[in-house]
Length: 185
Image (cartoon, rainbow, N blue to C red; front, top):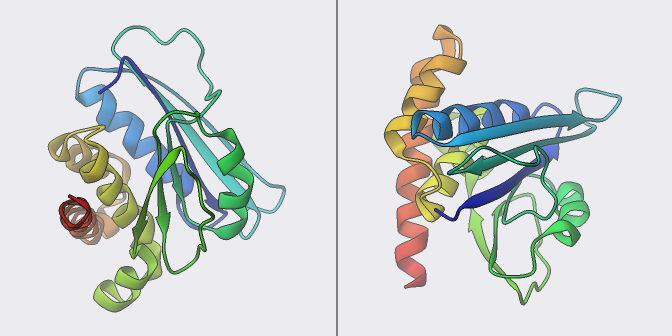
């Protein structure tokens, strides 16, 4: 991991963007990092824009907000269109839900399509785990946090009723990320 990583997670309300930002932050702390996080969402909770930002650092975080994202995890076209202009210029990573987003050509970024919503619907018959699937894939592709820390953070932040399904979705996404990465090599 770099000295400081700035991650933006974006989508629309109801997709669980804030939850996976929280899970990512907790996992990074479990891995021994310093973390700062913030969330923003539109006036209407469901359907409006939603964003979670996580700054992960090896030393205390000096500025708690994302200035230029090194990594963008994005789950809607509108969020993609709004967020790509805020990417860092060098080797930014974009991980997007390939069912919901048509990416543009970004010469300075590496983009990874993840079939998060499609997998959630086909494998789990529940699109509400697409957020955890894409988080698992992002962690696998970037190694920003460990799988063990993510599993602990999911167990800590998801209600008991949904815990097992979310843990399975996380592992599914993590395995998917490994396959996506090996296909690029």
